[in-house]
Length: 224
Image 1: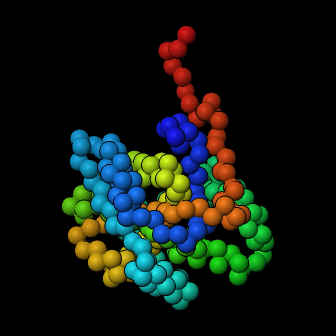
Image 2: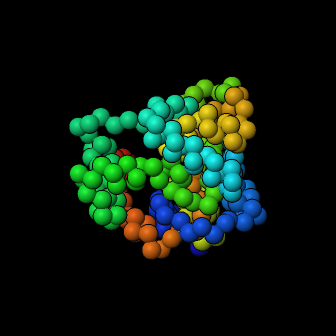
Image 3: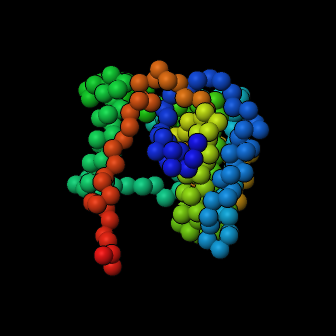
């Protein structure tokens, strides 16, 4: 699989088979991720790879928190979109596609809540990668570099038959992660990537989010 094919095939996977991902495969993916560009080669990323009983405990506690109404306390910059904007509209359009695929009606609050909980369970993937950075760095400074590393993880996973979903719901309760993954306070928890073998029968996995045409987001200058 070449890089162009990987870019075209990558999509967010929200349903996984239970098959475990071998550690040596995860190691190879992360080796490739560390080749991502970073400002002046600072490499401001750290990875915590979670599976097995540890992941089960984190899932359980995340769901208990969300069901109890506990307020999320993320340590990363949470993205927000102005309500009357194309960015918000794109988010809404994707949600409609996913709910339609999953047979979730707009008025069905119970199924909508169950769907939201999936993100806090890392979409039931057999493994999750938690991406952290050092608190000595500024809050926003490392984010571009970390984004490049995360994209590389997602692309590098594809030749191994793996799927991924970048999702911040998995880091909304950092105290849960610190408890079970032994993440020190000196590290800021930024993002989670659910990773595993895609379940081809899971309806949401067939959703392909639209992309704005290049001409609508590009200005060309100096070309003949």
